[in-house]
Length: 516
Image (tube, rainbow, N blue to C red; front, side, top):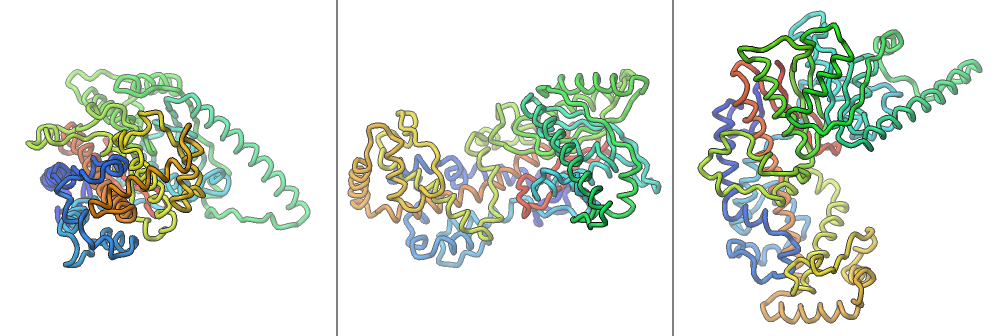
């Protein structure tokens, strides 16, 4: 099995394939067209639409985007189905996005696993899907490779960024029955996990008490237990594992310290207890921090003077998320020496716009068009508002003109939005806003623009920016994979696994996996 699945033109996922892929990603993201779109915020463009980059001219000044319905434009861009009459820059951009975005189809190699009714308590369908897939994958990681008896090699797991404890709880519950250390930097999250466990126990007591009473009366209990007979029998007879919660700000040193203390308390007589570190949507800088800690542990464990210890790291399985919450991008990107030493590295300035776009997904836009169109309208209306206050250079908030968020009804029309805005801005009336709009329209009409044309261009700009998001995320993911590949021995398998089905709403669906 390939270590990572790259776009079709990049071969089977070898190290050389990955290097070529990274080089092409860097070249594209630093290209003038892609870079200018990534760093151009809609608010700034709305404030000064007459000063857009000249490299946009062939699409910004094209009647093509005025003659088609927005949904048709989006459909053609996403499917890379742009005809000869399309602006050449958009054709090249759509082709590059298609060629360079990592495939995100969920892996078919993860064994099936289903939570029984009481384990599904409090889970949305999206979270249930994620927990079931992660449980199945981690359980397979913990077994002896190729062992016909499927004996477990690893009993201890560390869940970083455990949050409300959905994954933790189900890995510790029967039939999996792992022992877990649940780490989170937020005491509020840890307290939330404890409260959810208490809610679950109260729910179980209530439901099973009612079913027992109904059974005595010969009344069917309602929803059947959908688990297999074998799983039901195992769940009734097996003993659950344990959960230990701790509030820890994870870094290279804090993580092994927390694990060492836990193993000492959990299994004081055990030596070299294997531990797998896992994370389901380890937020922001947490994933890079865990990767650095893992690499440090790997080198310590494999050093010439490695000393006996109570535990050893047996692997990691991390799904990252929330790139926009990375605390210091200079520290967390690039991680790999390959990207850091690339000739285009001086041009590759990954900043806040890149990180925000990396969290975008486009696969469900057309299937849920009303929701997408509403979201787009919110962004464009806010950008058009900056046009009315262009003296602030697209940064009304710095002048104390903070609008904030509105409910969906405020975006029914542009005039409705202006009316709601006037309620928020001190000393500004609806008539003031309409006067400013008339002045802006007169200025733009002299240049051949009007509010309708600018709105369409802002819509297309946002679509293009979001289309580039998966390409940026691909760079971040493969850079992290390359970092691990560079740091561990050649015979160690470093994989990227597409863990979840994005159609369930699980946008961040790629896990970095190493099994030692």
